[in-house]
Image (cartoon, rainbow, N blue to C red; front, side):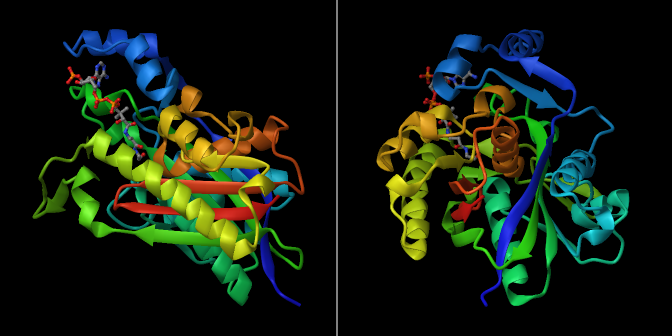
Length: 325
Ligand code: UT7
C-alpha cells in the first residue's frame, strides 16, 4: 500500500504588537518617510501587520505556532520525529532555528533543520517533509514557517517597509494510507538573485554589505504572476486534476493584486482564495501556513477539500503543493 502524508493539525502565532497602516504611517512620518494608508491599501491590499517584540525571535513565534498545531493534531512534542523550519530570519547564523525551536518544544533527538527559500520556504519545507514521510524516514513531522522580517527592513525605504510583517504558521504532517499531499512542484532560478535580497553577511566579526531588504518590486511582481500560474498548472497535471477541482487556493500573501491575477488565470473566483495579506502583510515563509491555519480555524477549509498552496519569492524560488485536507 502506498504511503502518503496528510496534514493532521495546523497552528499559528502572531506577535501581540499590531500596527494598522495609520499607525505605521504616523510612525514613519516622524522619521521623515512619506506614505499613506490609501497608497498601501490600493497597491497591496495590506491594512495591518504584526511586529515582534525586541526579545522575540523566529523560534519563539515558531514554537507557539507548533504547539497550536500539535494540540490540533492531538499529539505531544515527543511524538514528533522530524522538524523543518522555513525561515529567512533565523535566530542565529548557526545553529539552525529548527534546533533552537526543538529545544524550546522539548522534542529532543529527532532530526531538525532549516530550509531557506525565502517566501517559497514553506512550500519547499512541506515538499521535503512529504518526501521523507513517503520514504519512511519520518512518520510525524512538524513543518513550520517563522519570520521576523521587521528585523531586516529599512524603515527609511517606503517601497519595502510598509509591505512586511512578522508571524509563524505550522502544520503537523503524518504518514497515512489515505492521500493527503497529492503532488508538488518546486523551482528556482538564481539569475534573479538581485531583484529580492538582503545582501549583508557576517565576515571577520563585522557585517559586510547592507543587511536590509532590497527589492525591485515591479520585476518581482511580473515574475510572480507568471510562475504562480505555471506551477499551479504543473501540480494539477501531476495529480490528474483540473483547476475547477480546486476548493481553495492559498497563495503566498504578498500583494492582493498578484493573488487576483493568479486567480483570474486559474479561472477561480476570489471567493475561493484565502486572503490574509490585509491583516498580516507579507510574512514571507510564514504567510501560507498562517493563512491555512486562519482558514481551518475560520471554518472555510474543511476535511476532504482540495487545497492548492503556492509560493514565490527571493532566489528566485517558486512552487506549489496540492493536497486533500
Ligand atoms: O514576498 C516576495 C514577493 N514580493 C512581492 O510579490 C512584491 C511584488 N511587488 C509588489 O507587490 C509591488 O510592485 C509593490 C507593492 C512593491 C509596488 O507597487 P507598484 O504598483 O509596482 O508601485 P511602483 O513601484 O511602480 O511605484 C509607484 C509609485 C512610485 O512613485 P512615482 O515614481 O510613480 O512617482 C513610488 O515611488 O509609488 C511610489 N511609492 C510609494 N508611495 C507612497 C512606492 N512606495 C510607496 C509608498 N507610499 N509606500
